[in-house]
Image 1 (cartoon, chains in turn purple, blue):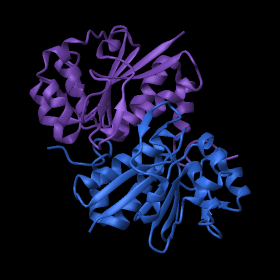
Image 2 (tube, chains in turn cyan, blue):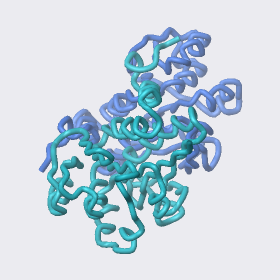
Image 3 (cartoon, chains in turn cyan, purple):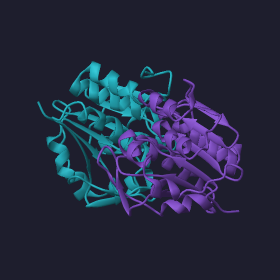
Image 4 (cartoon, chains in turn yellow, green):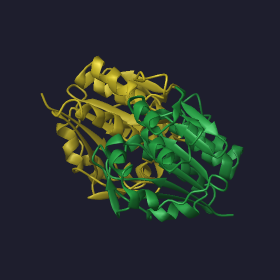
Length: 191
Length: 191
């Protein structure tokens, strides 16, 4: 059965919070060709905060049909989008049928979309006041999960990716993918 | 004083082993505009194993004048290059004046260039026989350092990046950059 995961990007996105999930989620595709990972945005290419011009695989509305949607981080890029009704209006997400996750400051988008109402979340330390201003209670943990909704911070991207893969491809695949990127001695066994 | 770090890429490079150092090393640039990070290769764009078309910032010979050179990983891309005399011949590296590091299977390149002669290294578990065939003794550790030469595996990319930044920008900057990407509660302090 095919599964699609979308990572929502924008200009000035944080490289590591996008490319670490991108890498891990694509490792599922190498094991299951029914699995697809798409970087999506409102332009054909977005440039990261570190200056990497990155091609997108689809537009924002692709998120609405995806099995899982991850919002990447980058305060410089996200802040203006929180006041952009056209950008926000592209999303019609449903945690009843979709897994919805965020990295660091990315939590501000599901918060603004009302998806975190009444829930706790985690975010980048400097973005705690932003999330609080959106009515979200922030807990200082690497990752916070409420059913189909999760928020993770920075190098907890590996935990967030594991959560998506376990939810959509099973625990064995998720454990296998995580083992394939762990430092020597902690993951795969040497031949 | 300006410093340049080159990350050597090729088609089918491993995303995480390239973009994690790319992100961390660029965080130094945000603190010190004399610092530069370049993805280099023998084409204008290289495509990662996960399918991301990535623009390069320079050619292979740029490595020879860099303050630090990191070889990213990806067995599918590296294996044919080990028999490519033109590709290998572009490099004229000197660990006396340059820091030279590798991620996972990337260790095969400095090994082939003779830079690891008589040294131990670490690599991706499935590439241990390859490195052994090049005469390198492999130790199962996340990262192995010999003076200006280091080999790291997978998520030890953060250790490798810290090593480069400490060597070329100082320990305070390296610690600051690492703290900025650690999971919530382990790195930066929330406001």
